[in-house]
Amino acid sequence: MTALAPHPATQIGGNVQSFDWAWQNQTYHLTYEIRGNGSPLLLLPAFSTVSSRSEMRGLADNLSPHFQVIAIDWLGFGQSSRPALNYNPALYQQLLQDFVTATFDEPVGVVAAGHAAGYVMKLAQRQPQVWSKMVLVAPTWKGPLRAMGAAAPVRDAVKELVRSPGVGQVLYTLNTTPAFLKFMYRRHVYVDGTRLTPDFMQQKYEITQQPGARFAPAAFVTGTIDPLQSREELLQIGRSLSIPTMVVIGEQSPPQSKAEMAALAALPNVQSATLPGTLGMHEEYANEVAAIVLPFLQH
Image 1 (cartoon, rainbow, N blue to C red):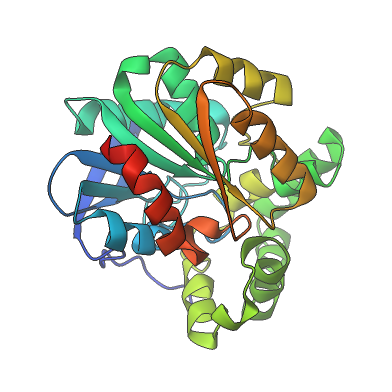
Image 2 (image 1 turned 90 degrees about the vertical axis):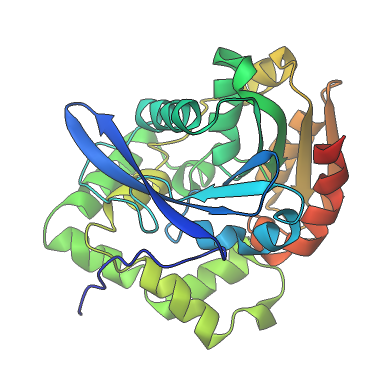
């Protein structure tokens, strides 16, 4: 198998930029993209094996006529650097804080999908002045193995196995074939299977084949980069927020995830909407999500 070299191509139809981020005496490159004019709006893709700012293209199409949208690839994903780091919540929390502080000189609106929502909420609790409004689309905080009930020692063992040379790459390869990715999409990510065309799945597959691609996804799948540790923490942070917040719930989300979304949406200071879709609704139903969130972001 030949690894595909990263290429700084447009993913949301904008101008590709690079942010150099220092972490523990090393510098890493974060790729992000800017499209449109107006007030800034940050788009944060969900964490997943195929996480990429490209999944925000539909939202960017709809929102860039009204805002200057900025979409990023998280460290370890997409076209950003993919070092063999010990990926953990502290790393991503600091990365988000540093990127927002360096990029924006005013409070910024944010649309965060999946696990990104937890990081946005924690930053809001720590520095409420950074966000003007928050939209949390199908917010999650448990990685797949944790959501399935796997014990911490089992999850840690899986992570170390995937990180290991040789065997780890083989396991990762088996779990990122186009057929397996399509199977996972049909189970948890997309509702309409007809959208999972060969071209679409090939694009997702290519995301997984960058050098060093297995390290950050291994951390996500095993719950190592879960931004929160309990529903109680989720709701405690949610209750503390003074920033206008909207939660968008996917109607077909897995029951456990949907229950978490509903609990957050039920807080008195949170607006909410339920739309078709599941954990990938920000991509699959981008038009519908944009139609709901645009009035909230504009007023």
